[in-house]
Every structure is written in C-alpha cells, then in structure tokens.
Length: 255
Ligand SMILES: [Zn+2]
Image (tube, rainbow, N blue to C red):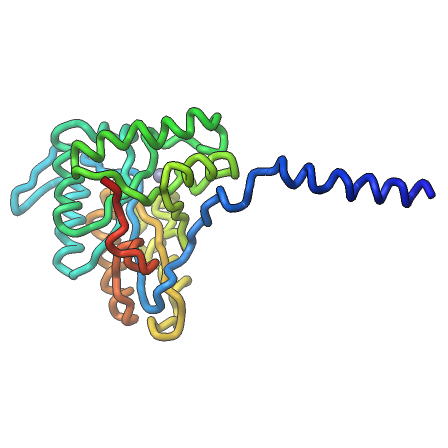
C-alpha cells in the first residue's frame, strides 16, 4: 500500500516539475556540423588581431587581413567569430577596418561575445550583456547585427542558451578542432588533426564539417590556413560560410 501511495504521489508531482523546467522550445540546438552534404565551413575565433600594425596595402602585415586575402584567392568563404574586447578592442579604428575588410570580402561575421567569458559561469543578466554589448559595435562596423554566435570555449548551459536563443542567435559549436590553440606554432599538428578527421572522406560521401581555428595565431593565419584550404579542396569539399553550409544563406544578419 505504501509503495502504491508513493507511486501516485510521484505521478501527481511529475507534471508540476515538468512545467517548472525550462521549456525545451526555448533552447536552440547546439550546431556541430553542416547539414548540406559536401560543404566545409572554416571558422576563425577570437580575432581580429595584429601584433604590429594594421596595413590594408597589397602586402599587409596583419594576420586577419592577410588570412582574408588568402581565402579570397582560393575562392573560400569562411566565418569569423569575433570578440568585442579580447586580444584587441574591436572599436579601435584599425581593427574595425579588418572586420569590415572580411565582411566586404563576403565572409560571414558572427559574434563570439564581448570579452570571451565562460557563459556557463555567468548570471543570465551577464550572458545577455556579453551578447548585447557587442551588437552596437557590429552596427557601427558592418551596419548590421549577426544572427550567429559561438560561445567561448564551446561552453554553454541551458540558462545561457535560453538567453542567447531569445536574442535571436543560432549557436554554433564545431565538428572538430584543429587544436591550434594547444600548439599555435605547430602547423604539422594542426594539419594532422584535419587529416585524422577527414581521412578517406570524400565530399560526396559524408555530411559537412565545421572546423575550429583562430586567426589570432600567426602560424594559423599565415601558414596553416592555406595548407588546410588546399587539403580540404583536394577532397572536393565546397568551402562556404556556416550559414550557407546550414542552408541558411541570406539570414546571417538582422538589421
Ligand atoms: Zn574563443
């Protein structure tokens, strides 16, 4: 009898606790791969960056700008998850120029939060600030606000997800990590990660990939990225933005 009573009590309580939990529909999916077969989205986080100076001339010294010029040469569209104030302040005139240059070249600009905090450790109010503080900067630089974001460290919980989703963002993680932040000067190791993840996978035979790298490292921006592009293209993948690889081209931004 006692057991039955307990079972009934649990059944009575269950709907109440279900109602109290955050509604599943308020959480956005954590996107880790391209839905369009044969596509490959290179993504570059934490930038823009330049340890010396910004130079938009034909022979620039700037990491992000040089990287963009290389991508353009290979007809690759990439996605840049930029911070407001991480390595540099995005509102600094010279860094604004770098982001604008990437945008004007057709690359997708997305949010990586204002200053790269772990969103899973913040209050919901602070998570909202991490997103909304960057929005006016995007408005100033490219005239619109991204609809795509990546949480720093790929770290997010349901509370942060609900806030970010309610602000209209799609949340992008990655299929695999080049791990360039673990070995920023070892291009061979970066390439080994690419090869380990793509070995034997011709574009026609699999889903698409979202790969993680960082344009704040000299070797990534000036050496590794080009090797990776050549390798991925040799397998037959079409290298496109995250939005395009998800069949969402044209919806990268809101006004
Ligand atoms: Zn990051």
